[in-house]
Length: 78
Image 1 (cartoon, rainbow, N blue to C red):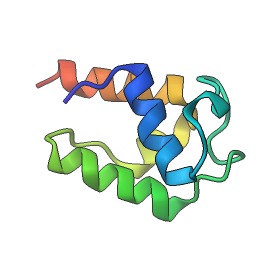
Image 2 (cartoon, helix red, strand yellow):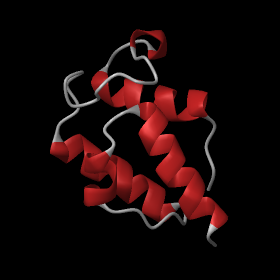
Image 3 (cartoon, rainbow, N blue to C red):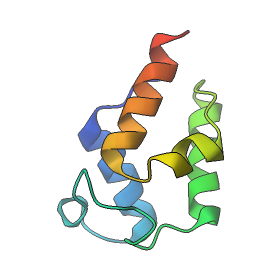
Image 4 (cartoon, rainbow, N blue to C red):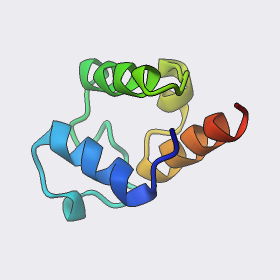
């Protein structure tokens, strides 16, 4: 699975119940209200689609840009 930045932003915005445009690519997602339970929900979705990513990897870079880089690297390593 490889998502575009906009697809990733839409998926995160859905969990936060906000419009995608309200989340900047460099915004801290924790500050935006994304808690660990929602992060785990995303991880489980992505694992179900074939991307094995861990919580710690995402916590190190809590922005859409950071997550996109992590997910793209995972997709490229398969």
